[in-house]
Structure formats: structure tokens, C-alpha cells
Image 1 (cartoon, rainbow, N blue to C red):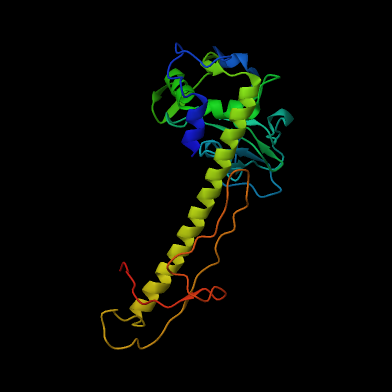
Image 2: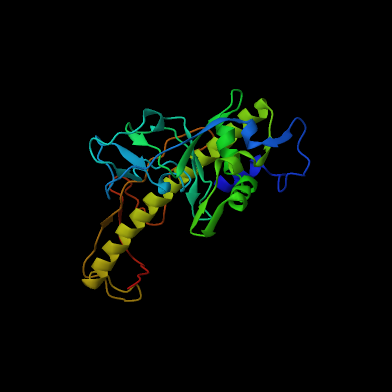
Length: 282
């Protein structure tokens, strides 16, 4: 879903020589960026910051598809940090230095705790007036632009590449009219939110599956589960309680629905299951 959102913004743009839709034009990233602000990395502690401590973000905070504020390093008390380096909601952050796959990774900060600062490997991109920030974030994550960032990065090791601000500003980009920016930015944001909600559901389902697997393995090792091929009745009937179904908020076009699995018993209130046929990994 995330890839579909990215491809939608540069579907016809595999090279800067290709024809664009009506009203679009080719330009440079510098044409839509008012300024680029870099951070600073002071001496840090080898641990994440507590809620009341100041911290500098790690590159992992902006290279996993969404902003992860817990990916940070605490700075010692009394360390002087510049106010303009503090991260705020609405910022567009870009990873300046990382592996070839992650250099140029971009995120849109929707919310951020106070006291979190840019590092020397992160950049803040401030868009020009009349540029939709959601469209710009999605454009920077599009395959064509990411490929250009990787190609223009420097470094002898693939595990540590760096892109200079001048090379970043010079990247050719397809610039959409404002009404298309707003439409595409909104659609891309909805796709990202839906993907995040789906990721949450998958994580909850995996956690429930792991709990059920452990409960079944414990019951099997204790001899409380008999083979379904056996003609004799089970010695002990066991009931395994499943965790409640995850609740996902309805956002935009994303519709959450409850999923009924074969493990659900007729008694929906207790949600107990009586294992009859089980496939175990031992």
C-alpha cells in the first residue's frame, strides 16, 4: 500500500526527459524548498532519553517509513543545544547519511515530544509557500527520487553513504500544480495511515497467535491433548482464552471490521475454544 502511494506520484517519471501530465513541469528540488536546516550531534549517552531528558534522534528514527521518536540518544544534563534544531510537529525530516538503501529516507513528523533535536545526519526541509507538504514528503519517497538520491550520494562504503545539500537541491523532480499536490498528498497520506493500521492489526494477530501456540504447546507437553484419531474421549477438556480482537480506529477510506477465525467458539462472550484438531510445531 505504501509503495502504491509512492508510485502514484511519479508513475510516468523514470527519467527527467519523460513527458508529464498536463499542467505539470520539470524543475529542481530547490524550486520547492525554501531552505534546508542541518542538525548537530553533541556527546550523547548510550541509552534512550527519559521523558524529561533532552535527546538527539538516531537515523533509525527516520528510516523506517514513519517517525519513531523513541529512536534517540539522551544527552547529558547541562548540554547546550540550539533551539532551532528542536524537532516540531509538521517537520519534514530527511536522512542525510546512512546505507545506500536508507540515505535520503524522508518522514513527515505528525507529533513529537518536547526536547528532541536533529542530529548531524538529519536534515529539516522547509517547503516554499504554495507547496503541499504531504505531497512533498510523498514525492521524496517516490522510487524515481530515491534512486536519484542514491545515485548522487558519496562514500566509499555502501554501508555509509552521504548526500550533500547541493546534490540534493539539484535533483530533477516533476512539479504538480497545487490542486494536484493537494489531491495526491491526501491520497498518499490515507494510504500510509491505512498501511499503519494494517500493520497494527498484523502485529496484534501475530501476538495472539504466539500466545495460542505457547498455550497449545504447554497443553500438549502436559498430555492434556489427545490425537483426534483416537476413539477414546479426551482425558481433560481444556479451554484456551484468546486475547480480544484489536480495535482499529476508522480513518478516511479505511474500514475496520472484526475478523472471525475458526478458533472462535460459539460463546462469543467468553471466547473460549475447545481444541479438537490441532496442528502443533514441536
